[in-house]
Image 1 (cartoon, helix red, strand yellow):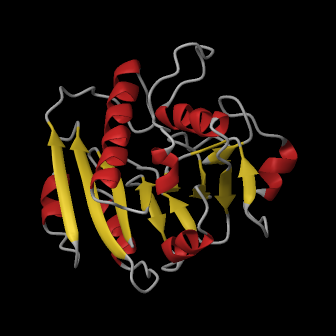
Image 2: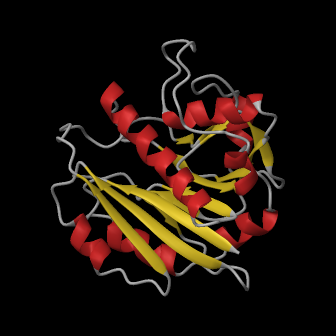
Length: 237
């Protein structure tokens, strides 16, 4: 069984060694073959050099995208940045199909898998879409930490949901997810992509939201897993 791991990388030299070490430490079920796809984009630091020195015992692809710099901070978004992310995510789905992967694991490069059993646990759950849960302030250190999953809409969550999502003993059905997501082959075979949905309300933005809405209307459940230690790291300088 093959799994494609996809990560966009943009000026992440400050966290990339820790991210890659945690990724390389992941245990997977017997018979699982990992492949890696790193999309280097809008980057002026030495992220590419760090990736070149990462030599996993499997296939590693590094694609560079010489786009003009957006001069934007992490977690700051524009229409153009969303457009680029849609392209990268859809290309990863296409590559997963091309190489015959059973799963695509989409993980952001500032998300650290502290538990080496995380990926194995998500794989063995064997559901169409499941995200590992973490809490983050999303670039604003003064903000209340919020999870990378939500109940509905752009980012709607009840207090009960917020209080329980970090410690839920069961996998939780959610309305949206992103940043650390395992996607099974039948999802892209059903035609689910990250393409924009133009008739949504104007504040429904983001490639992950487009993907989740498409999955939901296709009848594919979205699950969240809080059983493992996952950490989001915000840049401090």
